[in-house]
Length: 266
Image 1 (spheres, rainbow, N blue to C red):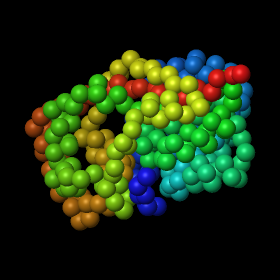
Image 2: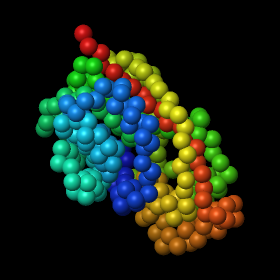
Image 3: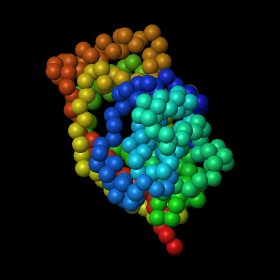
Image 4: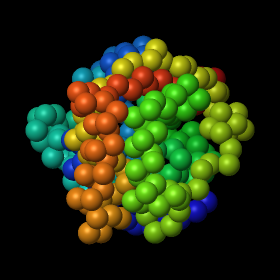
């Protein structure tokens, strides 16, 4: 698997917590029901980012652990935890292998939200099988790309991004490489049992400021890639988007899928 270096999300954490949309309540309710959450046991949020998904489950577990390789993201997660005044969450900076070597724990539910593509996926599944409780497992949350049709304004955003960032998607110190195999195939080869659920679509509303902030929260749209062209990029994007929608309200219909890797009891 390609290495993206140690600065994949450098400079993005604050934008991440301010502008990345929250996952819908339908996802939270689905996971509570699917894993029969009752306030006991432990949860692992792998690739936790700023920790906002983990924080949604504080009343449903005794302990939650958030793991991420980006120190800036863990720092942001600690800040948000302090603001929320919950004390049953722990944060770990590093990868899964490093975490597992230091802390031998088992988890009722493991979430990987929009992060599995950055991982050594087969190796990750192997390690997580032993870290999963019987009857528990992994929930991999990702957009249903085939159902999320691009609107006129989204295509324009893509066009402007390519103009200023380049046609190849940057990631850390190299170019992003899409997974060669889908997650379902990987899970079917593992010890887990595969299941998949598509959640009802929901509408996300954006403004120009939140669109720009969301771009800066991504690995490919990190602000430092623009150098001295930040203002020119923002003005270009504002002009193009206001020409499409002068009200500065942009709607997106989002379909989420939850790919489940379940550890069945004996």
